[in-house]
Length: 180
Image (cartoon, rainbow, N blue to C red; front, side):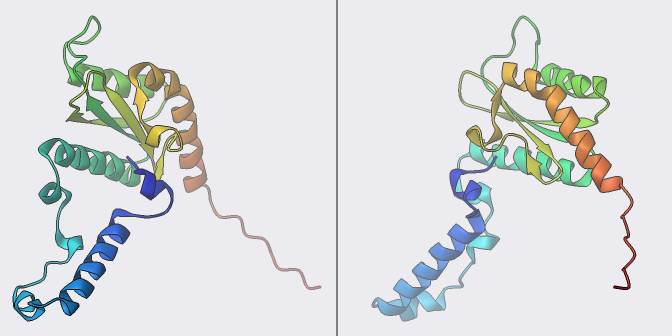
């Protein structure tokens, strides 16, 4: 899921880099900076999301990364399912059954997909869809969709995926140079 900063072109790496630069500047001008310099500096880029957050956020980051990686490495849709407390319900006993139903819905449209689950500490499950390097509908709530919105979007997401895959597999068009 893209954060508001990332949707504006500012990545976590940029933020962490800015914080690290500010911290080093402050350490250089404050008393005791020599003592601080003796301790090894660990760049923020080497600190995982899990070391900086709650277990829920860590699990979300792992599942989100796996869904994005799937979409980048495969011609299908990576599906992040951020599971709320709405399972079991009258349709699905487990989140896994629901995830498989979404995968099957994409298969019905001729598109491969894989789901990735993570627990959400809220009432309702939300989902995000990744196709190649894109987050589907990222401009609307970071791409997160309720279960109903997700099911309604599957035909369109499948069509987008087929288009992207068609463009990616098309042979290059070579135009001969004209002699003037």
